[in-house]
Length: 343
Ligand code: CP3
Image (cartoon, rainbow, N blue to C red; front, side, top):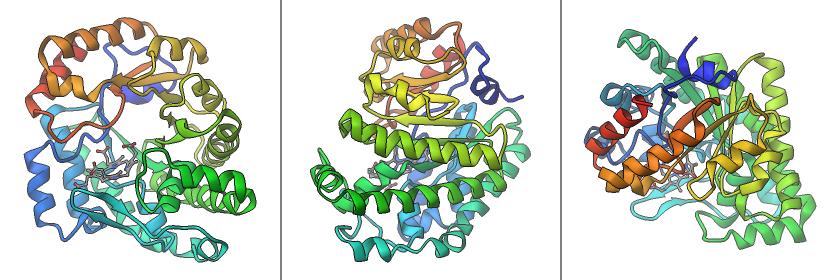
């Protein structure tokens, strides 16, 4: 079994498998070259040959233990018929979803057709990994968790505190729940299609889970994760699922109770403290500060050693605590890989 998959099945593989969130991206010159030629970011995500190529770029360079499908969490609302644009230097821009009519306009019946190019990317990457000799690299499929996707849909893009989202959850609970239910059901279909196409593990990005109160976190993060995990495991027995309740701190334990095989830990959480709250078979993934990789040298070495020492002897996947940033020198990533592979 591949090293990542052994780890997610509860084995303390050492040195640990390693991959990095956003490992395909703007810090790589070969990514920037393809991105410059693509019409826009959505076109890049829906052109299988290009999306598969950028998925494989970091694998060729570094031989990571996992490839992650090149796409975006906002491709699911896009597939539901919600607008999506990536503006240069601004990030994603979406129509603001604020009323019943906007939720009713989301159309689950179009998802399968619109995500078909993404499924073709999955098939191309699986074949590419074998053809290029990366037989131990596992392919991770992913989706944004319903709450995090709802955050971008309601705000119309990013936000520092997602105040409109939290206000809607309190003031219009029925409307908010209807949106969450639509996204939960669509996520199951979308992730299931990725497994059918060849994804070997799945990750659920709940990047804004940490902005919620504990009770709303249980209702809008844990409960949907549980529905998604149960439905996927019923359809695809044994498919490993990593949850990433970013900024959730001690609430990560509640998230793991949804039945995930792994829990991603963000940069600001003490990974040993989170690990101690989880069942021993649940793999922990994380959590080097992306800015430590920008720094490189002895700060990166010290931070990496602390994480490795804290995680030795338990199922653990080395990763960053959030996505790699564009200003990262690619040679620092090579140096990081050496540190991790030395255990
Ligand atoms: O390599 C990988 O990790 C796979 C591809 C991937 C992307 N986005 C590509 C991307 C994955 C897994 C994501 C997840 C994602 N997207 C999340 C969850 C993780 C997190 O960061 O919290 C979120 C919140 C998004 C939404 C999103 N997409 C934002 C806020 C932005 C703009 C910020 C930015 O970095 O520009 C994106 C754009 C995006 N998604 C890029 C990439 C490579 C950059 C776009 C470009 O190349 O112009």
